[in-house]
Length: 228
Image (cartoon, rainbow, N blue to C red; front, top):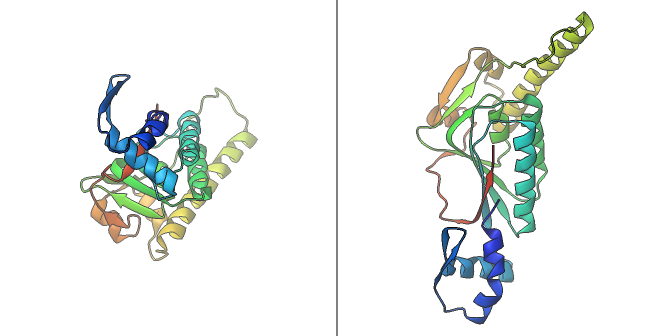
């Protein structure tokens, strides 16, 4: 979901009347045309354009699939960089790693911003940013990994398989933290096993955060939302 359709729908009018400033009521939202003018001019001139994706959901197969879709739609709408406003209590490990590798595959710079809480596997999504910001007052939670089981019965071999997969997810989690922070001097495994809470400054000190800064939409041309 985005406000991009409204922008592009009035682009022809803006080219014909570049000095006009008025407000249009669309689906209960008032849109000031000066913003349309800026967006359209950027598209026509090939200038840089930042899009913001708001991910304020648990990490599930459904939310990550929607997340992938809106990111790709942002690229289709001329985004030259993406800003991910993230607040999530975590969730499914497979979906979290999938989101991380998806963001790393994108051909544009990705900024991740912890606007409140980044917990459990949501840390992995956060670490995908080439620039990683956090609001003062936000927190990061690293804690032991776990799965939720829906099956009522499993044989010994299946239990061994699940244990090995969980061990491998732990290794992958630590590898991502080591790779993105370049801080191999930190025992990430010990922090995870101790259920560690880090504020923004502590996360910056250990390399998870590249800057502590207030989240803003002032430079965002278009906003997108992942629905839970």
